[in-house]
Length: 467
Image (cartoon, rainbow, N blue to C red):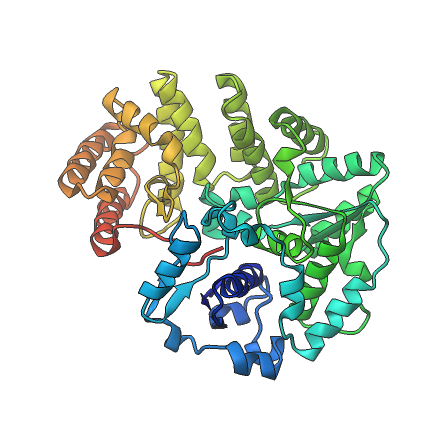
């Protein structure tokens, strides 16, 4: 049984413990890889070399060189029962790879009850480096109230090109929501400890609410990023309740203490989230940086999107756009709302704004067009609004043509994609907002060509990093 992950610490440990559990169920040994790559240099990640994280004995028994793990191992396929697991293992040349997500998502819980057990005992069986063992012990020694809530804030996916994707938003607790949760739990008599990598944001949040910043109870001796991460993970595991988005770090903390993560959506209703966002950002609009403000408004919209009136959806999306004007995600949704309601002019205005920003950004393709046609391993990132763009193009929208063209390219229809691109060029030549834009014609061609090229090579766009 193999754990082979090359991403963040939480996902690596989730996969490792899954491999240990599956090996126990099947009566086989387990191996794991520990590649470093750019993660070892990224300050937002806590991945360090294997010999600095695990004991020499544990590595000697279980570490497999990354290159040696590239062939002969098959992905675990589900839904599986015990016979299926054994069959998959026997059919694989060398073994089966454990997933990082919870085992019960792939394995029948009734047929294999062991997948329901937590990982406290398995975690204790991992041979960690002495320095990691020391911070684990220190975290377990921190005195916490009997009713302590740990809130984990993940922030990395709000920035860079990931901020334009829908795929990772479910991992993040918006800051206005975190503030509302802290106040709610405190009113119930609970101690609240806040965890995350955005130190200054957490300092401000804790100073203005009275919550405890997890970093303030760490040992006073200097710690590496990996040591600090493990201290925080184990301290979060010690909390009576763990509240977060679906981040690997929080899931790992819950699993090693035989608990489950509570997603904030299970505590606050969509209308509660909207109210908390308005209450926090309305009078305190400068409290957070633009990226976090934009995400908070976006999350308020997205969580309630199926319950909102058209006007309410437009209001929340425009607030997100105002905070982060160059992020195409909210503009694409705003255009989709217009086309869905038959408001062609409204949809077109949102896309014209997006295209003008794309050109002014100086990139090699039209970013908003690429975002709409982005495929992840789960399908189109914008799957919910693809039909709205198709509707807009059929109803006579000029801007929607280039977006539909990219969708056609991604679906393996290069002729249809180029046909839409040609029609869009004709529209743009006569549109006063687009006609004089330098590089637009070139970017249209480059975007369609890139979509056709990527589809021809792999058939799917995948994130550069599994988050």
